[in-house]
Image (cartoon, rainbow, N blue to C red; front, side):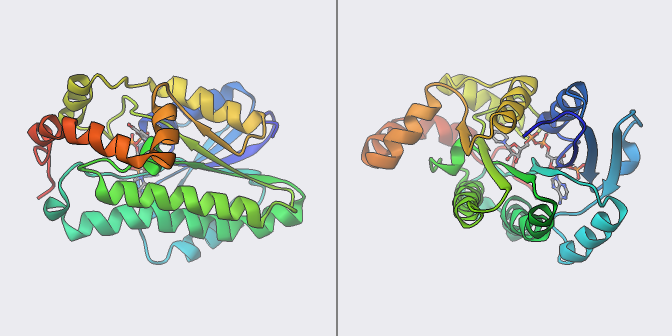
Length: 260
Ligand SMILES: NC(=O)c1ccc[n+]([C@@H]2O[C@H](COP(=O)([O-])OP(=O)(O)OC[C@H]3O[C@@H](n4cnc5c(N)ncnc54)[C@H](OP(=O)(O)O)[C@@H]3O)[C@@H](O)[C@H]2O)c1
């Protein structure tokens, strides 16, 4: 999809990767509508507008209707919002489990359900979902997050196949660890202890836009993470064994930043 002179609704545009996307999209000549729970704090920039949207809300469908009335010319949606909690399952508050399911998975379904008929009617449109390496590899401490991102990957794949004979593009991009506020210091320390590379948000944003410009279906970021994704898919016992070795290190950091 061409980016220049298009209007994109960006969910998660106030986050680490999202802010980098706003900059790159603007640089490419696109207009951006940033959706946030608290859009008041956003600094006004030419070509970038903001709108209030709570992706965890039960009335999301009605919020999307109002948004489409206010912005009828949206050409694509980038779902780059997300929440996660790094904690053993028993230490995850139920509210955090609910929020992750609502924001990471349910909202993606409702957003796609709302925009795909509009894009079909318009003759073009893109639905871009930002997943994660953890949407292909189950990782200790991220049970809920992994479940939502596995779900998002499955949802994107099924939707892409369902819309394959329409002009609607469905793209799934899976970053590996990225240096943003999503990761508390305990997770940064864990990544350092395990030797995991953390990408810069602007590099990730660049990869997302490349996938869009090249009309790709899916893009997995990072080496060796994308190899582990393949190995986990065909020989998961190899990854089970590798993670069993990492478990004592993971346990050192687990539950250190649990929500109360
Ligand atoms: N950081 C990583 O290591 C990493 C790795 C792989 C994949 N990812 C994925 O990349 C995407 C962006 O992550 P990030 O690191 O940029 O996250 P981040 O810096 O923590 O930002 C999270 C974004 O999600 C939005 N959000 C959260 N709950 C929301 C809600 N209820 N309603 C509306 N918006 C909500 C926030 O907006 P407001 O607070 O303004 O409402 C914010 O813009 C996510 O899907 C994440 O899962 C991240």
